[in-house]
Length: 213
Image (cartoon, rainbow, N blue to C red; front, side, top):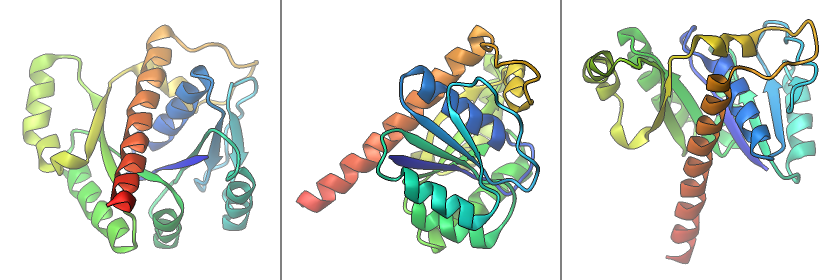
């Protein structure tokens, strides 16, 4: 079981959307996915979705669920919620990858870099950024990269997620059984899963090389 925490101190950067998107992408690739809801807000209803969804707002519940899942195959995704130093310490010690969404916003970039440093001070070894809400317009994308994303450490950027408005459906409670999202959301979920899988593989390979050396 691999653990990925989606974190960020700034609201509106897409943490919850990305958490659901990643769990969905894993499920579509036949990887058992477990999404842990730790936000202070009540969890949504996800009847019929192809991944497991748990209310893990209490730290003891999260620890119990993680311990129970640790020997299983699959991917555990932690939707980390807001700015909680104690939770950051747990994340730094407990997950394989810390994924931090960043949007083209000067304050958001600055806060993400500060949060990365704090997590690394707590002992996190694998903090990575993913550029979120990237414009499909090439000129706008280049401008956003030049003005905002280029401020991030290049070696810690693992990919980008296009701006797709239909992703917001994944944050909504389902009145009926879950219906398959639009194809662009499904494609985005698979792309995100492969980005994260590649990052996890690189991390594992780096550890193995270090051990051999």
